[in-house]
Image (cartoon, rainbow, N blue to C red; front, side, top):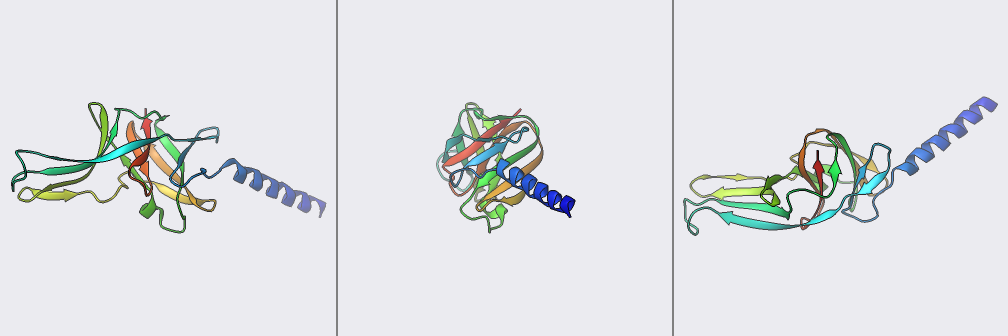
Length: 176
């Protein structure tokens, strides 16, 4: 009986200390990187702007329009090694499907900026629209009252962004 009680106390202690190791970010929309030693670092958010460009002269039936999110600078200040990445993303409510509230996508690097294409439109040349920010596959599990642990397996080198509801401030990171 004594051994059983001791085992129960040890199990509760271990579970409690493990749960205390993972903490939710303080504010909604923040993204924290879980490092190999289980410590967490909140990713820097960068300002993004929505831009539209057209090809050709003015707006005609043959022109194409392209709308994208643009972040200044060719690389993120947040550097991560390639492989498996774990992020804790704070959202308003984690009772919703995480694919509806968290977007993870890869930027295309152009000169001194990073871009993510939202839509390409041309009346006669066809229409291609990207309506989802979930271009990088991930798994998510609930953490705490309002966060998800997002796990991305085999992440390759490149520039990435994570967004929740605010598209003007994106948590970015660079995989090297």
